[in-house]
Length: 64
Image 1: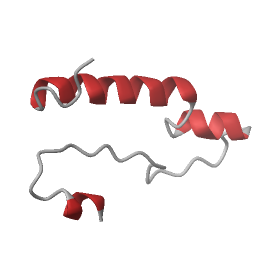
Image 2 (image 1 turned 90 degrees about the vertical axis):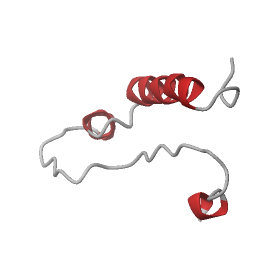
Image 3 (image 1 turned 180 degrees about the horizontal axis):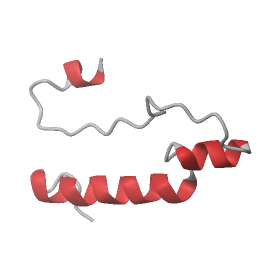
Image 4 (image 1 turned 45 degrees about the vertical axis):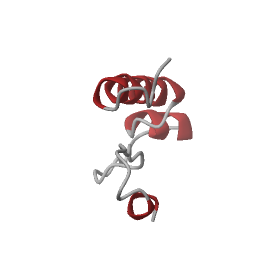
């Protein structure tokens, strides 16, 4: 719905969620988060990369 609402506005979307691979022996919930890239370190890296790319692709939109 967000992308549809922004059809006429240059924007980027970062989808974050569980991958379509199955982890049967991942251990703790923290291990599960890390295996799917949903731990704090992985999320921070993905967001930093996303916003860095955004600042190049959408001038002024992600200015620091």
